[in-house]
Amino acid sequence: MRAMVLNDIAPIEESPLQLSERPAPRPGPGEVRVKVRCCAICRTDLHVIEGELPRHTLPIIPGHQIVGVVDEVGDGCQRLKPGRRVGIAWLRHTCGSCAYCAAGRENLCESSRFTGYHADGGYAEYAVVPEAFAYEIPSVFEDVEATPLLCAGIIGYRALKRCELPRGGKLALYGFGSSAHVVIQIALHRGCEVYVVSRTQSHLELARALGAKWAGHDAAEMPVRVASAIIFAPAGELVLPALEHLEKGGTLALAGIYMTAVPALDYEKHLFYERNVHSVTANTRADAHELLAEAAQIPLRPHVTRYVLADANAALQDLKADRINGTGVLIVE
Image (cartoon, rainbow, N blue to C red):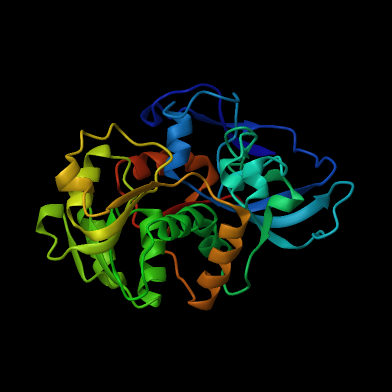
């Protein structure tokens, strides 16, 4: 099969992904093989490729927002049959028995394993995943539309939970990439007002087009305080202005898997009056099912830019340079 393979950590500007021929994987017991139709790119892919996440399995095929069709099943599979359209996301394994798993917090499982990091992902013609971690895609979504939901959507949805946004409340989003452009659609559907801060003019224009009440480059110019906020940009310096614009009792969620250092906080200025800071760590399968159901009900419409598989390096370079509005998607077929 054709695959874009990372052999060693390097800046994406050096085009480290190599188009290679690899044997197609075979599903083991309890696994399904998916013939990949498309796979969205993600900033987490950049963190893996450039070494901002700890070096793990190499060589590796990145990609964890995969949509395709089951074409082979391993022994013991009962839910999915060949021909069923499914999605594969970042989370691909948990132990199922630790205290976190038992409490419904499998995103914190010490034995978690992730697609495109511990095991090969979707920058390829085929991918394998445990049946229990494959998601059936609602029919309302085309293949390309569904891909951003499988990480950007799921993580955005969990961040929305973690920021404790009340119905009808005011929400601030810092950074307006793939996750944020999904979250704004959910928040607006729930009757909330959304305020957006981004350094990229085209992202601000998309935010306004999607219904943002206000969108600007400078958080200091935000015209109101908000009940909740989410930082999607991997920039620790945004924590201070985000806290300063929270109402009393408000909550800030930090949605990135990686973030630069957070500056020192002033207790009275940033945390007093019961302001809260919540980090976001991966997701549970329940998050994914809830997000897919709500997204289909809206129905949510992601904005996508298409690339062919062989252009994965160029797509990720565009992502790093903030040249993509919404989500970049690799077309594999």
